[in-house]
Amino acid sequence: MNTPNIDKLAQGGVVFEHAYAQQALCNPTRSSLLTGRRPDTTKCWSFQHDFRQTNASWVTLPQYFKNNGYITTGMGKIFHPNLPPNNDPPSWSPEYAYFDPTPGSCPNERKSCPTDEPDDFFADGKIANTAVTRLEQLVQSNQQPFFLAVGFHKPHLDWYFPKKYFDLYPETVDPPKYQTSPKNMPEIAFFSCGNINSGEECKSRNVSIKPDTPLPSDIVNLFRRSYYGAVSFTDAQIGKVLDKLEALGLQNNTIVVLWGDHGWQLGEHGEWCKQTNFELATQVPLIYRVPWKTNSIGVTISSFTEFLDIYPTLVELAGLSKPTDGIEGISFASLFDQPTAEIRNVTISQYPRCCENSAYHNGTCKNLNVDCGSKTADQFKLMGYTLRSENWRFTEWYEWNKETERAILTNPIGGVELYDHKGDNGNLDDYENVNLAHNSDYADVVQRLREDLRSTIRSWRNEEM
Image 1: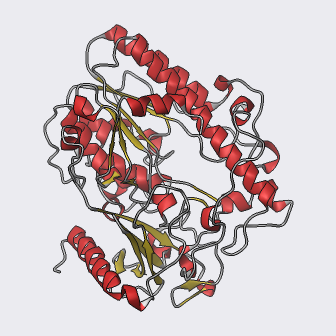
Image 2: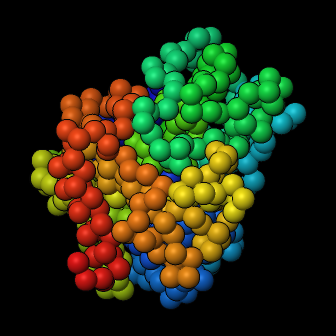
Image 3: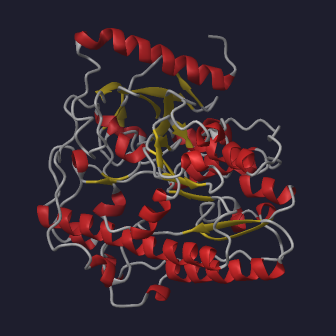
């Protein structure tokens, strides 16, 4: 993809090639990152949950910096809209109003609609301009250190952005290599993304996302090209902010962190959007630039990290005292001095599944519209947990106990998955094409990873092993 500004940031910083979100959905992963706690602790698994309702006294990442003498100010999508309400006022300094323009949607119910409008016609262009102005204001005040959070929307749907970025890419882009679901995959693992299916591109052709039937090739090409263009649009906005940081002489004493709240599937394995436990949904971009950590300039780090680790890491890199209110992340600040060290050797992500009672039987939804995004926890049927190690991805889909709001770890009625990642070279869809969980040659691997996964979850719960 054409991302000169992100590339420049990576060249001057650290790329974490094994960073993973706690859940491939906006609100749960943002709540997790900003509180340093797992979804099972925040109880944010969908768009119906607000971590402040779980514990109003938790100190968020920006709030921690505010409590330690920083001006904290933000704009765009940092917390998920209205979760908590009003972008969580306790997190921000009152002298700087939070700026949160509404992103536009495509006309005529399309999902892809690049236009000839300029950058600042769109929400992300306005956010970039506001960030530039805010940096100037912060420098002029020259009173306190600052924590600036800038949340761009794209490449989120709809793909509504300036056409000049769409035109950076050829009329035909490379298609996914494997466009059907993994062999032997349990049905519950697949997600048919309603946000794509509801678009005019699919509705007018009477097509939808299915495990064994790819979308028409022209739609696949349009959507992939649109996503790439939206990424380039966001890259240009990132460049405006970083250029202003440099112009103000702040680049050598300012930590910059670039992250995206989840991965995204673009037709690989027949999947689109997020909302799964597969690699392409859970793996996330994460780049740090810490100018005074010279051992980490232009480095790629292979240690596994989770998004809930960002909170304690930033605190340590800024020289603040360690939080003591029970955050669950692990600081990986030591990696900036020893990039080849290892902080984690596995990561764990999760995703719930829902369906109407009439469509549910013995761990399977009879339709593939199993999204829990608009559901509360008492409507969940299953919770899938996935463990990613150097060589494997192991997933179990457990029955959900709505009274305790916990998965029943002895009952993976939704299915079991094992995918081989040995020799993973980062190619988007070369892996996770065959579920090996029921192949007797891998029984020992399944048993070992099952024990690791379940014991780790029990340790979160403070349960006896």
